[in-house]
Length: 429
Image (tube, rainbow, N blue to C red):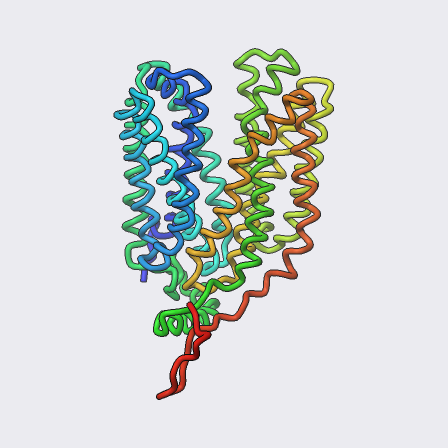
């Protein structure tokens, strides 16, 4: 059981903060990374695809590791991700090294993503607090802050290694704290991660049933992930959310530059406003996202869709920026709400694998989003392409009513045999 402590209560937030520090530095230092490798845009773009190639298999496998070893894996993987950034700097002077380093970063990122989301979902279920939403808010805030810090450091030193070393110091330190705070707790523990006795009592009856199911599955060596169909649908809806969110985050500055002739400094306001709004929305909306998930998804989907339409038809820069902010307000709450809603009925013994299932499918939207938007922009221009993003959130709205019908978990059916009886030929894992 994890003792009540500041680090224990803060473990999910520290994990997401460390993850945000890494990706903030990554985004700010991509021009230096390209220059260090000495490659053009086309080859660099191909190399960046390896982030996804490394992340997807890691995301698929990490959930089982978390279920087997425990939540301390989250801190360990976070620390390794910080180190991977420094290793990338050391090997990226050639194209082969660049590709290998990016592949390793992708694998580390995918694994860390699943582990820290499992940690946050476990803490949320046992405490009844909106941990998932607020953890994602910590990620958004630290991405914005660390990108500014890394940009300033890179401008002062011109050193890729200095930026990623500074990131590694912070990320490894946070990972160490998370690992220490969670070292004695597994996803099957019945204790609340923050030592809150009232929350533990409130959850006790449900945890006893879940633990019994999980123990039976482990004794019999079988059992399948419950509610797999629901998890895949939640992941698919999450893919739409990720694709829309990524499109705004990636293309908002390009929109202001191309459609309204904004200066680089003014264009940078768009992604900064998006990230800031996302962080505030996740922080402030956490309690509602936890208590009224379906209503949150509908409201957020409507706001995001309206933001996309406004952005696509805005006649002036201020209105376009208002559309970006509205889209941030809507899209920011979609995936955290989906993840929390989808994982809540999952038994403790399967939460890591369930997180893998949802996150891996949702990540496909993150990967496909830029290509989808690029095709639309090539056909009709960057500004009109945001209508296609509004179509994604409109499709998400249409899918929301399906979720409550699928949410009841499938029964866990471990293999049991009567004393002296042979297992049937149809028994399977």
